[in-house]
Image 1: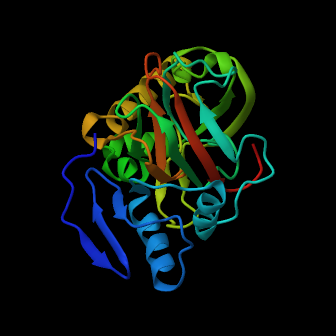
Image 2: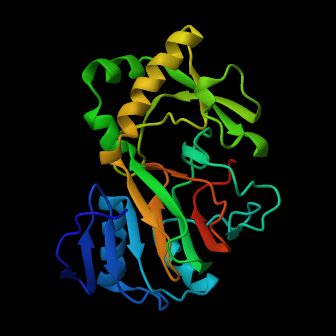
Length: 273
């Protein structure tokens, strides 16, 4: 749940407030294009807080695309990159829980930003959870941080029937794609280190026995996904959520019993996935 919201501020045409443990909520009609200082403030809030929430929005796809284009090149050519996520999608089980992950984390250049707009949802019936992995890296105990920095990780693109699996707990889980990436990477915009491993797409740390890798990753994830680090957004009609897919990881629980859930999606980033 969103918690401990600060007082509203008026700043360069935006009414906004910070949200704990991280994120910013804005009160602004986003159906019209942003320009000048207002557009600049939107981008700076995103870069600073990594998670933007706006409620009671009515956005066409083109309006959502225009907004996200302020953050970088849109992913318009990749299949399913721009469109909808719905409970009617036959290739994704609505009963599956999605552990924490970042879209494209197994690639050289993960997606930069994701956005979801609730165009048809049952109010309060489903949620998405977020953690800021720049913050999590900074607060890791030094011993864990040092061990993690010393290794690359095997990262996978999960198969559709294995998205609910915590990959690091299984030897050689099924995968569509496998890559080797540093366990700690540098954010291309902030130049700060972040945790590049996650429970859904990281199978193991290279150069370690599998059992030792599993134990170390479990300690890292226990820290990263502690309740005090999680921002949970409960979906209501008209909500728009935009997040930095590099600095944040996201997860969701089962959608069984959540009713119809249609989220309009627009993404920013490369085409490597």
